[in-house]
Image (cartoon, rainbow, N blue to C red; front, side, top):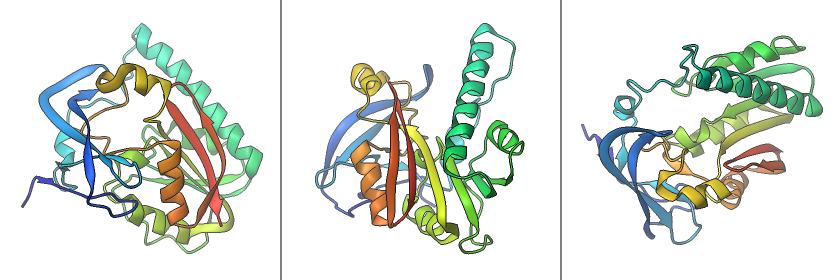
Length: 238
């Protein structure tokens, strides 16, 4: 069984690409290993992605030992928890601006903090990790679907978007938050950018490429908020 695989552009299928940047195996500011990975840029649509990359069967090796939810009472973690609480409340209020009841599916729910906040509303909240199958969920049944810093980890974003389109109601909304490869932070820090997170981040989307892949699957972006490093997208079915 292969440990790595070479891939082409997941948006336009083009085989034409050029080296965008060599990146080390890092998690945030933490140096994980001495491995280096090639970030490629599609010559046709501009998508930036890892190739070669670990296969879906072997990517777990690069998550082993990575602590996404370190709750030790350090000053940094306490500050991070306060910021996280603010972020959760912001997302909660953002969603309530569009819809206030129905089924809410959180894909890649992590520490469950967001789901817990949403359970205090009128939503019926459930979550799955990104490795679980969406096929058991009924067509047009979800009022809200969220992926907070998950989409860039997916080996097959097209397959997920096909399933998300199927299960999202015709009046529902899709919310995505992810790093923005064209952000001020990415341009300033380059290969040392906090969100490189190689090889766990398989794709690095820009406002244009996330719009392209969503349009490919018949989603329209109705709102996009940008920060120093990230973007938060609200989309719905066309």
